[in-house]
Length: 197
Figure: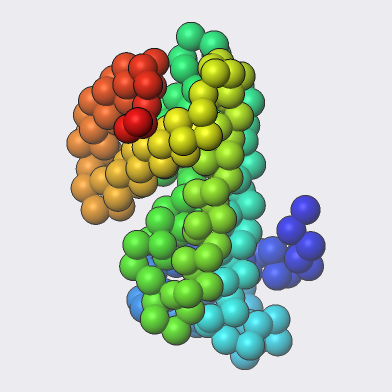
């Protein structure tokens, strides 16, 4: 699915894990090469430099997290409410997935040289969450106005990003507490008229 050669796939997998832990600034091309079992010079036969490796690896991480998010939205139980399946799995996913840790570190600690490109890619991921959430809301509440849909989408993504920030800078326990409180308020408000008139 990624269109990468097997060697480049291994390099990107190693880079995702490495950048998830050390970020762009602390990332070492030599350490990535060593973890794959090649020399640093050989790494440069696959990529021009760190920026290219970082962005290619980010694309791969976003593919993995997009597939995960879509799976959550598709597997939603009706009693959970629109969007809850993804919210419920964020903490476990963050622990288990270097891809999500890498994406969030890249999005919230933008390297200056490629910050714009990262921002565009991250916003694309958030757009997917908005669209997936809206699809579920519309299946449950057909009477929503366009304004209502927009308010609900932005509130949902606001909750998701709040949880992402807490996982990035705080603790899982605090994130779970925040998730439960925000979801309770949000789900109650979503049953009413969501936006100002």
